[in-house]
Image (cartoon, rainbow, N blue to C red):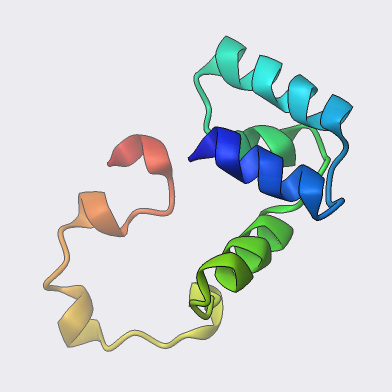
Amino acid sequence: MSSRLGELLVREKLISLQQLRQAQDEQRKTSAKLGPALAKLGFLSDGEITNFLSSQYRVPSIDLATVEIDPDLAKLVPARFASATPSSR
C-alpha cells in the first residue's frame, strides 16, 4: 500500500518524487509507515494524508476529537485499543 500511496501522492502533485524518496528513506530507517514519515518530514500533515485517503477510498473521515463518545460504549473497548498512541496497541 505505501508504494501505491506514494505514487498516488506524486501523481496528484501533493508531494514531489524527491520528497517521496526522502520519506521512503525515513521509512526504512525507522520502520514507520509512509504517512507518518511524510508528516514527520513536514511534507504533508496528518490531516492532509487523511483527507487524501478519504477521497481516494470514497469514505468520509471524521475527527474523533469532535465526536462525543457514549461513556457506556467506551467501557466496552479495552484501553489498549482506545489509546491514541499506536505503540500501545
